[in-house]
Picture 1 (tube, each protein chain N blue to C red):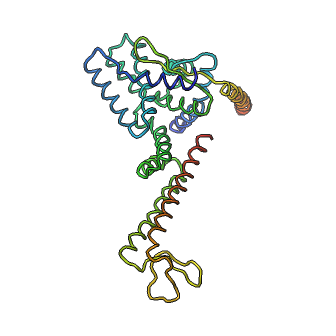
Picture 2 (cartoon, rainbow over the protein chains, first blue to last red):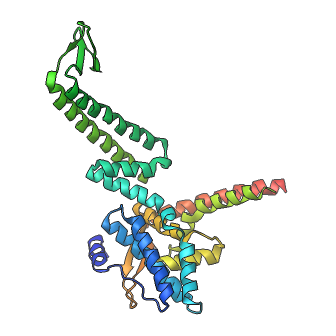
Picture 3 (cartoon, rainbow over the protein chains, first blue to last red):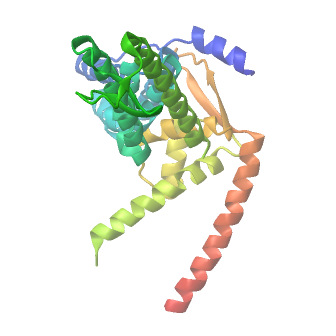
Length: 208
Length: 114
């Protein structure tokens, strides 16, 4: 079956809840599915559907293979053996979230993904710090609004400082209020560059 | 005897060999997830947190070593079958070769000591 057909088939093959005979078993099952859904919330719809169907199929097959057991006991066994969703699915979700965030360039998603990945290596901490440093430029933009002396200072034709220098005629501020759009554009460009590097790093990581 | 140390070592060995086991299991016959887990449990007495198998299968697929397909069932709960790709077969061959070499050298070392 080729990939396109498979996608089509998956789209028609939706997650279907298992119907249990015992009321309490049904409650336990419903709770488990809900907690799975919660854990999977941050990732893409199609990925969520896939994992949900995998776990659901596993539970169903377990019940079919343990029909001699009391339903709720068999169900609890299946759930116990699968392990806590937030734990077993953590690496998957961390990666999928990073994939989604570097596609959408959404800063909140990137922050969430980095926080989830932060235990996966020093480089993610470095990325976190890089994004944080963008905050400095944003701070400067606001600072300019409150103090017009904030700016980009040159001395004898050489760049010296971004920020504020008081009462020294040797330094010239060269941007004036152009400082704000220049900083804004710098932030945006840096944001894109850092995110593209992050994206490349993720892809390289998965190839390893 | 350092039981804690042994347990930790065992779990590291299991973690390190799980993908090798999985690839071997689906070499000749396509298997669905639950079946695959049962086979590994029966033949190796390895207790795995079963939930970790599915993310592992996803990774193997991403690497191009396996392919998978959902197959509709009468119950309405479809099964996902996994099988080795050609690339997976070639990779597994190399893994087996390495495994055998490793096994030989381990045997040599352990025989000398006992």
